[in-house]
Image (cartoon, rainbow, N blue to C red):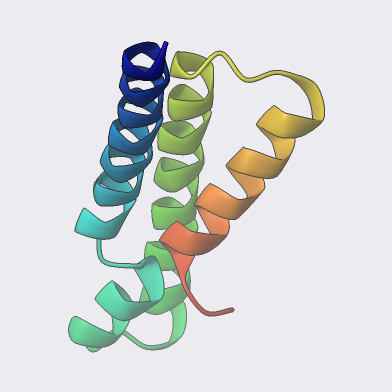
Length: 88
């Protein structure tokens, strides 16, 4: 019985680490715009495209995790917020 519990716990922790590492690898859109020293229309265009790309990635990740309803929407919203970074 303990072996089953430990294997389930390991699976949950492994998936959490994997999910976190996938998001941690990407620099936020805002940070990337700052690194590239973008300003004005160029920055706005970059941030808009970056947010669109992040939304697509987050939606795909939610679908892969088979999330639905409020859990899916909440997950996507947080994922996009994390990807975009500070408010632009």
